[in-house]
Image 1 (cartoon, helix red, strand yellow):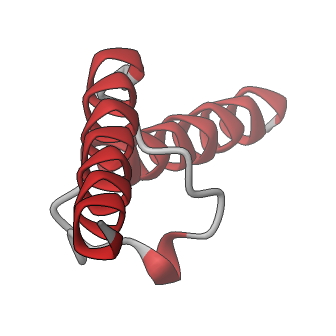
Image 2: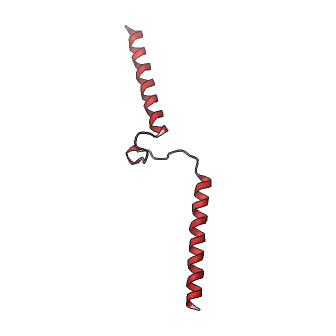
Image 3: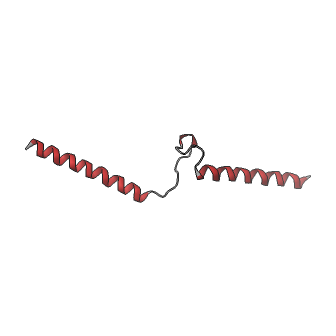
Length: 71
């Protein structure tokens, strides 16, 4: 009887873990939510890192264009 109860408990835990896993996969939006890219598992291949670099470049060129207009 004890083995049956332990087996049932184990099966319920496994089902719960799988339900949580499937739910997290469904809710995942495909975007990285790390604000610090040092923990990023992609290590430089992340699209968010590329977007941030492009934004920095755009700001720099906009700032440089603004500086040349003053002269």
